[in-house]
Amino acid sequence: MIPVSCIHEDDTPVKIPPTESAVLSPEVGGPAEQNQIWIQLSAQPANAMKSTPREAWDLGFYSGEDFRVILNSSLVMAVGKIKNAYNIDEVNAQTIGDMMNWVQVGNFQDNSQYVDNPNGEILTQTSGIAPIEANDNFNNVYLLNMGYKAYTGNTVPGSIYSIGEERGWKKIRILRTTGGYKIQYADLDQTTHQEFTITKDAEYNYQFFSIVKGALANIQPKKNSWDLCFTVFTNTILNPTNNLLTSYIFPDFVVTNTLGNVVAYEVTTAPGQGEAAYSRFKLQDVDATKFVLHEQRTIGSNWRTTTGSNGVEVYSNKFYVVKNSDGFYFKLRFLRMKNNEGYRGYPQFEYKAL
View 1 (cartoon, one colour):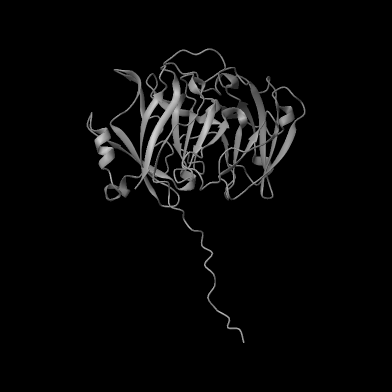
View 2 (tube, helix red, strand yellow):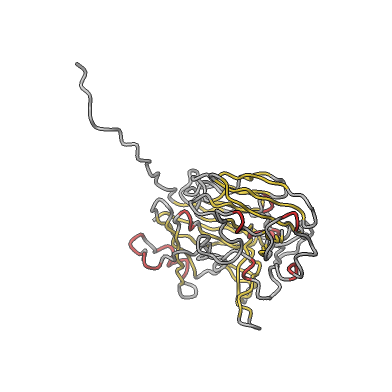
C-alpha cells in the first residue's frame, strides 16, 4: 500500500530578494520627456525598466472594486462636468457655454477641480471625473481637454519642453457594465458617438484607453510589479494672487506606486554631507514612522531644483528610503538630471537594497 501524505504542498509565492544595488538612467526622452518609465527596484535584471510613450493613453479605468477613472496627467489633460447633460449627442460647443476657458491647466485660475487630485488617492478625490454611478441617469457628459502632444521641435541646453501642439477637445460619458465600464466619446460638435467596453483586470491598478486610437493601451506593469515612475506630471501649487490651488505642469517628476502599497520618505542632510550620509545609512536606520502614506508625490520634484545657485541641478543633500510591495527596503539617491551637454531629461539615480 502506497502511503499518502496529508501535508499539502505550500503554493505561497516566494518573494525574490531584490537586486543588491544598481545605477539606472531612465530614458525619458531628453528635454521633451516623451516617455514614461516604470521601474521595479527588485527587478531582475535591475535595468528591466518599462518605457511607454506619454501619448499612448488618455484615460485610466480603475480595476479595483470602485468605479473610478483618471486622466493622463502627463499630457496636461483636464476635464469638466457639463451640468444637466446626460445625452452625449446633444452636447456641442454652443451648449457648454464658456467652459473651454476654465477647463485648463497652468492658467493660474481656480482650476484644481478640473484635474485629478495629484496625491494619487483616486478613491477619495473630489476633483476630476466623479465616481461612475450604477444608475446610468446619474452619469454626466464631460468636456475633456485632451492636453498637449509631446514637443518635437528644436531644444536648447538647460530648458525643458513639456508640451507641444494642442490635442483638442472631446466629449465623453462613462457608464458601468458588468465587470467594467463603457465609454462614449466623440468630437465636441459631432451628433453621433463611438463606444468602447473596458473590462477590469484585478492584476493591474488600471486598464488604459486611448481615445485617439479607440483601443486599449498597455501602460503600467502589474500593480505589484512597479515602484516608481518617471514622468511629466500635472501637480497643484498655491496661486499667491488668490491663495487658491491651481494646476501646473511639472517635468522631471517621480511618482510612487501607492496603489501597490509602495511608500517612501525623504532624508535631508547638512550641505556637503549627503553622499557620506547615504553611504552610512543601514537597514537599522530606517524609521518606519516617517513613511508618507497616501501620497504618490513623496519624491515628486523634490529631488531637483531649477533655481539653485548653479541653475538646474540635483539636490546633493537629499536621498530617499523606499519600501516596496514585498516589504523590501531600499535607499535611493539621484545623481543627475542633465547630460554632459547640459540638456535636461537625462536623469540618473542609484539605489541599494537594505
